[in-house]
Image (spheres, rainbow, N blue to C red):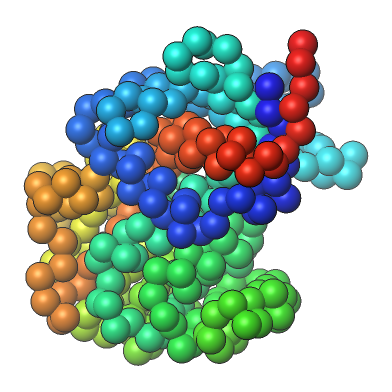
Length: 331
Ligand SMILES: NC(=O)c1ccc[n+]([C@@H]2O[C@H](COP(=O)([O-])OP(=O)(O)OC[C@H]3O[C@@H](n4cnc5c(N)ncnc54)[C@H](O)[C@@H]3O)[C@@H](O)[C@H]2O)c1
């Protein structure tokens, strides 16, 4: 059995690899070659915790099997422990034997950013130059890398309601990415400053209110909504969703059931679920159209899926084994 830490994964699996894996995952999902049961949530009341189990199995282009375990223990912060620890357990789909254990926190950041990168590659204008990232928390760093991997950005503006955090984030990212991307990275004080003239906007926040004003967006913009994943969470304005030329989801079932911003215009009677365009997997399989002109406004909305975890994990394991990376243990 292979143990893969964040550092091991970084050594053998790039954002470009992860974007490719995300596209394969969503094609497999849309083609009906994945079984992704609802996650099982266990309350651990005695310790004020919750433990979530996200299993999935896939066939078709990539056979993969596994379960990601994500726990939410708010009191861990006082013990100097992570409050949302996550671990990926991958099984060999041919034998059912556990093949690897991976850092689930990094896997989540990577696959969530990669699915955004996949959508940005498929939906934004190819000559996109200015990016805006709203939300500089745990997911933000890889989201920024995915945006810069998908398009050659000259400028990336980052905004967070915590300006100090945004400034620190911009400083660190600029330092780390020196010589990797030619993008000027700067923190800005308002979301308006971030999105004005932006070609690509990505939101990845815990917000319950619109994170920007739709009237500040320019024609031709592509927007990725990565944060809201419960009915009371909201990042994208209804005006954007009702007026966009294409609104595409990672998984239709997941987004329509969970995402507050996608549900809002339906609840307000402005549109029906059928008015949304479809899934990214359908676009990749040429079953629906995405952007049809440079002036089109396009939107991608994600709530995540265990199919992304198992397929990405399987591809990481294969690369790590080829390159002899990771620690092997025997029971
Ligand atoms: N789509 C997916 O597959 C997927 C996967 C993982 C996490 N998520 C979601 O992404 C979101 C972000 O995750 P995280 O781990 O980075 O969270 P986090 O708590 O580490 O960071 C959230 C950041 O958003 C900022 N924020 C909140 N409201 C804002 C607003 N209105 N405008 C600007 N910034 C605002 C906060 O200040 C904070 O810096 C969460 O909702 C999480 O559940 C989605």
